[in-house]
Image 1 (cartoon, rainbow, N blue to C red):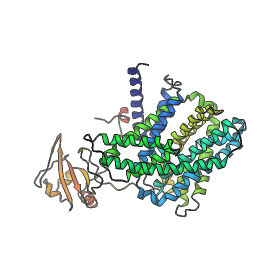
Image 2: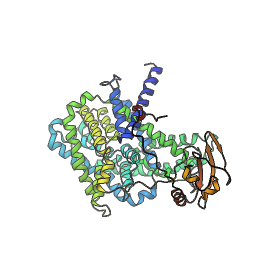
Image 3: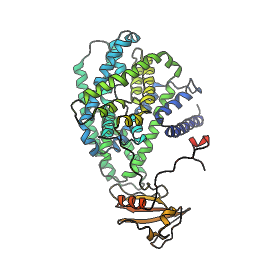
Image 4: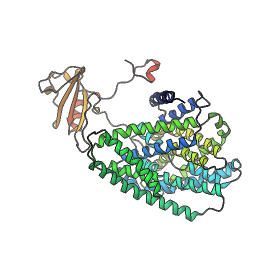
Length: 513
């Protein structure tokens, strides 16, 4: 295929995914599900793009997942996860083991004939799906903007970021037993798990500290290179930990935690850069996996796939959560039920299923299709219903009250260490009722109006500046609560206006003029 045609196809696919993600956000559908759907639509059973390269799919998935895990750690505050460190780690280790063993046992009892009564194949299939997927959890929890109670969000994010090592070790162990035969050597498997966790954790901490030191010591003339340096460092940490025989997934997540909670130059721009990298990684990964599957092949595994999906959603995931959280009395019954419901499957199980195919495991193609179908069911059933379930179980608080908006018209940023915040205010008629001058607004103490946007022009105001309706005022404040109170007293409603009742169909993707 010519490079021009390849670029044309990829750009069209990515553009279709972006539009699908925008439409899905409007209708409450997880973007990751739609990325998979676009891949399936354009695949060999859809519009005819043939893709069956397992190795390329594994590479894309691994690279993307390393970036997603690093970015997840980068955006997580250690102070948030300290209170949930014990339950999060318990869910990430004991919870994964219980899920794998319970699911494998039920698979053997219910549908062992599918795999020729091979208990190891049942356990292998269960192991590939035993961990919650970090890409799905980070994307859906943060994308939905759920304001969860009782530290549930850091608990779920810590679990999803740290539970891949256990699932990975279990998958490798059962692949070895399924391909080489023999009795299970649980002692070796346990030793492998412990060494991978320990080496991964230590490597992540050391490399994370080293990356911060490196970023702060290298003096580059071009500031745009700093985020790229951090990205390259995350890939180095992932690869180096592999060669140290540690778990790369855990190492890169811990390194992200260390870097994100340290002071380094251009920190805010680096975080913004990784937000874009995360979305690009998720889009690339789920699009590639969607292209890899042939929907026609899912028909043969439809019944077993649905059985496994609902067994995991309704039985084995709740069982593992309730056992793992039993020692922690601060989690209510509704908290445990919600954690049980957020057992999201995503890219990681599919990547582990690809590993099974690459290793020549018997029935690996059926396993891949079952895992893919279970991922679709999880994203449809669990991913789309998280806000509703959180409301039913009363584990989420109402959205925060309206406040001055983050500046959109002013491309000005401050280092994270500066506690002052900038806000953008649109001047309304009610704000001009007491006078049109800036001094008539009576802004609270420790609040400074620093710039006005009028039409396409920007200028620095003085107290005597006459404001007009529609002007955009940028303020810098140390007293955000006072500013909010002042705006409420002026009758300013900062919430976005409701959408018009009648909209053109293309407004699903594009804003009206």
